[in-house]
Amino acid sequence: MEETRLPPGQYVPRGLPVIHYGRVPPFKPGSWDLKVFGATASGEEHAFGWDDFTRLPRVTRVADFHCVTKFSVPGLHWDGVPPSALVDAAPPGPGVRHVMVWAEYGYSANLRWSDFTAPGTLLATHLDGEPLSPDHGAPVRLVVPHLYGWKSVKWVRAIEYLLEDRRGFWEDRGYHNVADPWREQRYSYQEEPGEGPP
Image (cartoon, rainbow, N blue to C red; front, side, top):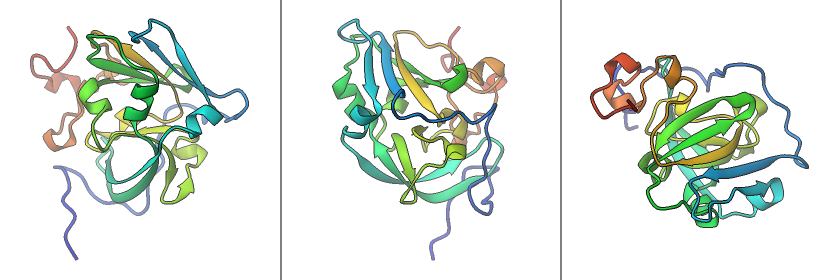
């Protein structure tokens, strides 16, 4: 069996631990929607109800999950909507280089456009063949496998297209703006010039 390669300072736990900030929000399919706003090509906000969202193209990704608290879970099977499908349905305007991913209760995480649209990134609805549990971010969780887990926002409700970078919830509280686990980018004091907004 091939040995799993882990980023520096990480270990493999039993199972997939549950870590989140605040309470778990209820999911009501009839009133749930996912908004795309900000610097859209049309200048207008797009909204996808649950039925609209589940009709978007879907893919499966096998990816590791790396938490900044130092655990890594290899080989998870995620199913959901690739960001490219959402971008096709709600195109960005010229000059969009970043996104802010918004969740229930105002939680947010910022991403470079290249991270949001990377081949492994996914708006996941299923984990290992089963619908996401509420604790793991149901109904929709962003999965960005090549970054630390706080960028993989649970309970996603909106994507804001940005012309300029802006720090999200944890980034405002001292976490690294980029969050590459292979470079151990855990905290904002580690940022090099150009890795975060001024």
